[in-house]
Length: 507
Ligand SMILES: Cc1cc2nc3c(=O)[nH]c(=O)nc-3n(C[C@H](O)[C@H](O)[C@H](O)COP(=O)(O)OP(=O)(O)OC[C@H]3O[C@@H](n4cnc5c(N)ncnc54)[C@H](O)[C@@H]3O)c2cc1C
Image (tube, rainbow, N blue to C red; front, side, top):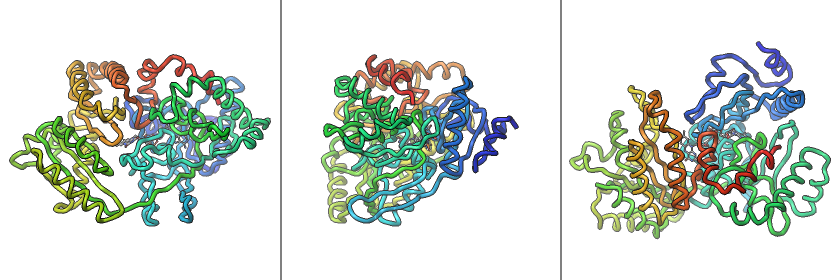
């Protein structure tokens, strides 16, 4: 055991290990890259995180850099939860829901960072509440991991991005100090700026950055932008009335500014009644047209899945409601629409209207009026099947997932994407969310083969250019991480890249 692991084990309540198999286990996350850390720590209390941060800070002052990377479940696709120094694993012990407030208008939940999203929502649902911006990885992803990546929810409701639901955070800073974020007024800001602590230094620095870059922030990184990149939350820190909130800065910053040790999130009301309609089409263009036509009915979810995704699932042995039917060979795309309106009458009316509209086009319809909802759920969760690598080591890595394109340009974008796929000799089946414009595109690849390995960064670079051409957002569903950073920064304005550099943000 190294001296450092021994020392840390003596000083914290949690566990510290340099064991090779544990380190290897933490060398990967949901992305394709790999870095083996030197040490893995499972903190039991916030004070453990503070002690580790203080220790590495003091080491750095003596010239020995041991970087800290905080981690939830490691499900992000961009290799941002791996690093070479110490991995701080929050999921092992820091997973308590501290308090649920159901009273009054301000309903919220207060929790630790390592709580699994699905577990949280199950707890909340028993109180008639939900965090509606949950990602599709809800069964294993942690809440702090989602906040640090500013994930986009599957449901594009009142809060399409998790960042919109964060009220306050408790954060351990790089030197081990603990701060609480939340909106403060101008007088309180002046007080914070007067503190002779690291916290005071941060308030002074951020206020200075905002003052010096007002025009750039207003013009290039607007408050309403959806890009989860760099430190785009800076646009939401200071309001016109002079009030100030550091929370948006930590949202989406992928653990680079501090370690979130507690969170307070707004909750939404939850309705367990849902009606789901699935329609199969012979081609994707017709499915996309039908989806656009359904927008005025205001569905809760509205997605179009390329038929190729089901072809891949079929090769894994999976069967769906429409599999094996006479028309099976012609499933070019699948449209899935759902309604979760509170009023039964509204839900029934919208479902009826949808079926009526779809009946007018060439499609086969399956609805929760006639089929168990679980069978329809399996259709919309096709990704969970195709993400498993097959026996020939073919996998569908997430390289260009989660951009967003203006909804009225999706048809045009889809043709350009087909051209891009041809250029790279790949299939690029997509899932398109018609409420947010989010596009999930995944190519089946053999990453153990050199030819496919070489395609990775070229594909990401070309895709980033294409998204820019369509005035879209490359990192809509999660922040850029190691994987997309280069391509993203090449397409951002130089002044914005400068603003996001460690010269400005180093705390
Ligand atoms: C099948 C699948 C489906 C997915 N669906 C979606 C989706 O619908 N929408 C979407 O946006 N994403 C989605 N993702 C991506 C991923 O699940 C999200 O980014 C996820 O919420 C990350 O949570 P995590 O606990 O796995 O975080 P990790 O991967 O462990 O960490 C993610 C980032 O957060 C940082 N971090 C973790 N904990 C903290 C903390 N306490 N303080 C500060 N920083 C921290 C890490 O350093 C890292 O940079 C999906 C992934 C998979 C595998």
